[in-house]
Image (cartoon, rainbow, N blue to C red; front, side, top):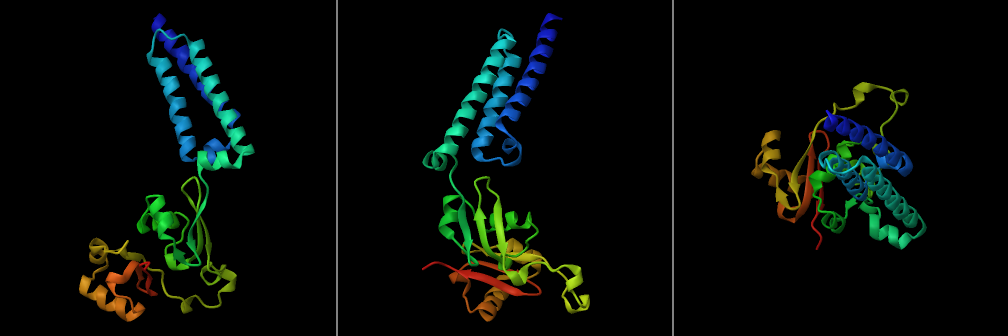
Length: 229
């Protein structure tokens, strides 16, 4: 019975301590998670876990560990705000991933990304084609901040004169990623490699072997970027 009561006290104390730590660190910890913030949270959780399952550890020692960890994070964050060089080393800095419609392959390589991952991040913002993107910044949190071409920005309904003038939306397929043919995507779209080579050459004047990525849509055709020479 005494062990159960100790467990309840530790769990309750740990929950209160975590809430206090989160409030001290600010809303950023919940709204803008960076890799460093993720490490903060992991260690915070491990402190509580160790206190819960280590029966010989008094709950005030857990409180001390939580308080020290919160203080350490607070000092690091404040110092990072004051020192730009330290902040860059600690958290990195945003990088321009797409510049004037062109994907920077070096930025992708540094961040261990491929074109399909970039497209996934864009889809999370309801942008379904790389063709629509003029600039994209890869933030420290791993998210993309995007500026579309003005012609690709969605129009409000009152600006449209006749809905019948517009084609129905279609899915975009990535047929070439990092210079490699995506055969599964081709199969899902109902095409084969021969069609890809002929159609890509006709629409873009690129050979498949010279393309870094190639995206295709039923309405707009191919959008491709050549390999860097």
